[in-house]
Length: 108
Image (cartoon, rainbow, N blue to C red; front, side, top):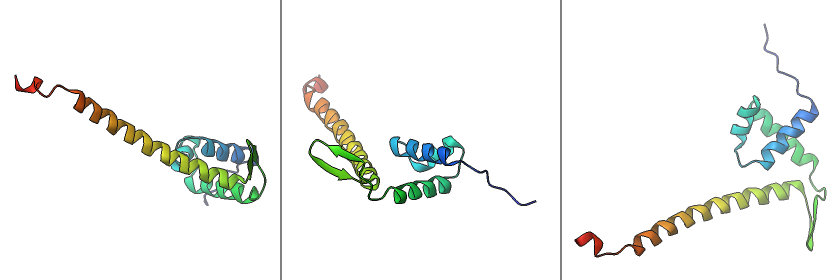
């Protein structure tokens, strides 16, 4: 008996892509939580981004309109930068704690 794939309606696909784009989680984790394959979610994301290519989505604060793909790329870049800065902050906290210790306290 041949395997059949479940049919997902366009609303479900759009909500799945929106959930992925707005979450901090990776594609595979979001797909696993939704009970779909990561390949399906990746395909839907690419279709959504291609369909919205060139559409003005965000405008304001003197900023020119940007496409959904540009915004998604910027969000991805900012999340990476945010994670890097969090790691740097933790390192600096540890270094400050070490430097704040009294060096003579260990010699008693």
